[in-house]
Image (cartoon, rainbow, N blue to C red; front, side, top):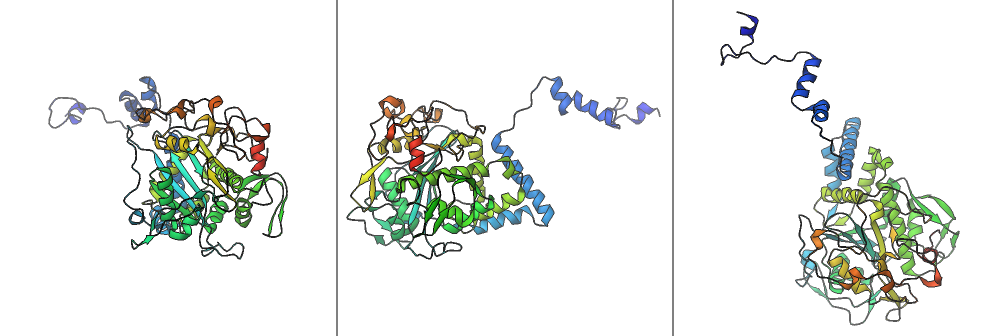
Amino acid sequence: MTQDDQSASPGAPGRRARRVPTSRADRRRLRGERGGGKAGRRASGGRRKAPQPGKVVVKVILASLVSLGLATGLGVVMIYNNWNGNIARVSLDDQLGNDRPKKQKVAGPREPMNILVMGSDSRDCKGCGVDGESTNGLSDTTILFHLSANRKFAYGISIPRDTAVMRPTCYEPDGSEIRAATTYDKWNAAFSYGGPACTIRQFEQTTGIPLDNYVVVNFGQFKDMVNALDGVEVCIPDDIDDDVRNIHLKAGTREIKGDEALTYVRARYRIGDGTDPNRTRRQQAFIGSMINKALTKGMLARPDRIVGFMNAVTSGLQTDFENVAQMADLAVTAQGIGADNIKFITTPWAYSDKVSSGIEWTPEVEKLWRLVLEDKRLTPEFLKDALSAGDRPDGSASGAPSGGQPSDPASPSDDATSDAPSDDATSESASDSPSESSSGSPSGTPSGGAVNPPGGGLSTSGREAAGLCT
């Protein structure tokens, strides 16, 4: 039998079988002939597809977890299950009533998301006893996070705690009613009456915006998250010395963590103009700095910090997210959007005597809620006073690459919103925006004559009032 006969296929007598590649050179040549491998792609003129930022983050996190699991003898599944076990998942659907606002339909595979984040000032939790005081559990921080359907932009809208509001009827877990307020009360009081469910009811009934999810964070969790990031950078323009509240912070740019970080975001009377809305702006700047650091390459390259941060985020967190995977998807989306396309603003307000030391929304807030409902970008009148997650603590832009594609801020988010009803707010120019009140509601020029940065952003006088560096 010849060599050719020996290599012939048994089912095809006399037909020569393909020579089995035995050397590395043979295997490389064969891959090239089939169009596989680098050589084959180059020969066919194909181009390697650029990796998507979100997928890169997922791969880095998974690779980091695998490395950590192998190094410590722990499995990735165990870590993931631990995170899921940390979360206190509480569905509030039975407490939100049957009169919730309906979502507007949008074209496209995805829908916009609206998430209400509440910060509880309760001291009855691990790491929460920061000042020896006790409260009934108020929501001193309330932020609506809006994520666009096309996942190209996001913004957070803060509602100051002292905002006057008529609290609606709320419900206990057993279905019993919590009677509606008969007079105006402060926004944060709803949390003490009926917990996060009452704050959600209050938000949906007063804005007409349906919420997809909620999150409650306490003092202890906040400190743990900052510590897991190994501190967050801030810029304090002047020394803060408040003997009554035992708050002492030195001026300068540096990273702070733990109790010092919590003290900084809670400080009010010895920094800026002492108002709650401007303290809210400082909190927004801090959250933006946290987001910026959490998405940095240095953070993603440290498996220990990723695990530590996720432990801090999930530990005792109250939410209605199904699992960690849903929350991680939001983090990936934020990385893809880019820090510069994540904006923070405060509801337009004016001083009010409806509640003690209170404020109230101005008519411009209706335009703001309309933008959220129709999934549109913030218009110039609101961007004027916006902070960006990409801003440096000293007021300069970070220069970090943006994940999303910039576009006219007055344009719809995508084709998904092109069918939405037209709104004057979406075509309104900066010169047509409403005149300013003494409080800091939208206007073309801020109080004090300070000019806003090109393209929008909090003015010099606005940063000073919020206790931020300029």
